[in-house]
Each structure stands twice: as C-alpha cells, then as structure tokens.
Image: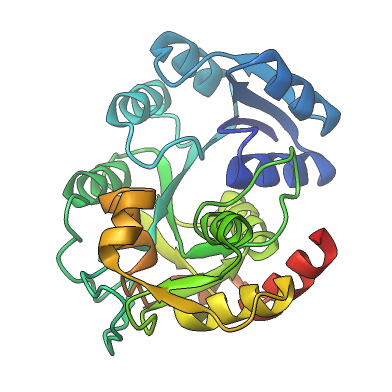
Length: 297
C-alpha cells in the first residue's frame, strides 16, 4: 500500500510510518527540514519537503496515495480540509490523530470518577470545541473511509525517527532541572495512558479495515500524576516527589498545558477498538518510566 503520512518525523507519525515500512508498505512522509528528511530516509520513509500550509502539495500527495495518515496536527482545519477535498469520492482511508484532552476537566490536581467511552462523551473541554468539530467533520465526509484515533497520554520510545512524546518529557525535564519531581496540587488527577507500540498497532489495524466514520479512543490503562511523579523521582534518585501550585505550573508551561495536560483528569475507555482484535501489550506507564529513566541516567 502507498501511504502518505503527515508528521512523519514526529513521535506518533514517525512511529506509524516506520512500522508501516517494516510491514512492506511504501511510505511518503511530510517533513519540514533537511535534518528531518534524513531521519525519515534512515527509516525507509521517502521525505516530502513541505508544511501543512502547502495545501496543493497535500492534495497531490493524498491523490497519489492509497491512504493518508494525518499525525502532524489535531487542529489544522485548512490542512485537513485540503486532504478531504483531495480524497473526496475515492473511498480511500484517512486516519486522523486527535487526543483525549477533549474530555479533560479543570481539576487542578483533584481526582474525578468520570470515565468516558466513544458512545458516552461529555461536552468538550475549554478551548477544545474546534477540535471536536473538526473530528466530527472528518467522520461525516461521504465516500472517504475516515477514522479518528483519539490518543491517551502516549508513552514509550519512538519506533521511527528520534522524537519525544509531549506530557511525560515535560515532567522529566523539570525534574532533572530542579532536582525534584513534581505534581500539581495533590496530584490525584488521572489520565488514561497507552504505549506507542500499541498506538502504532491500532493505527495499522485501522488502516487495514476500520469502518468509515469510526471514532476510537486509544488507551490501555491509566495513572495519577502523583504516581507518575513518584516513578520519576525513584528512577532519578530524587527523593519524594513534591507538589507545585497551579500558578507555578502555568508560569512554567503555560495555561493550556498546565491546566488541561498536567493538572486535569482525562479518563477514557475504548469500546470500538475491541472489534479490531486489538490487544495492547504495554499497560504499565510507571514501569516504563522506571526503565526509561534508569537507562538514561
């Protein structure tokens, strides 16, 4: 199969693209620099130089491919619209990457009992309305086999070009810089989690035959930020993790990231993925943190 992957040098896109190559697919990947192009080439991915702003390029690549994986941005409406126009009437697959911050609350480190699945969704989190509308628009396009994969907190080492996930590296960097591992408030807020290898497996299963119009959560477990901070502290030999105020978190990471990526609850369960015989194999984020940071010391 000929695939076109946006975000081909990134954590999710690069991992999906590299594994697709290993499974015998021909993969072309959108990249923004010569350095990223070289990293893709080393994984067997043919680099396509450009950005999401190059709408004609996106359309040409989508039309030439058998399927498209958008892993560059969950929010770029113009780029997605260009891909959808190019794919209109083709019945080709478009896999779009979203994220479970769409159900995140304003917990500031407090726990929540609310857990959501694909058929029971709350109103979108603050400032996530546009992402939810984009997800819905993608799923409603006729004669395109569109699938939205809504990822939990992704952990693990990249399976393609060298890249990092988002949330945990923020905490790793801060712990190394300050000499203490931190959580926000009481740190009892929980996020669903999933290992990158399991993410990639589900993407490729979706590519093979997920029905058009499918929205699926990608998750295989969950953890509190206090427990993840404890795993970071243990692995780096930093003593007990400590609380930081939401004001300090906002000052370091910005309001959106602090409130809705690190201090919120975002707990989901995947119902639809079960139909694809998906069996995640890496459920323990705390164990991965311990192994990863101990090796990196």
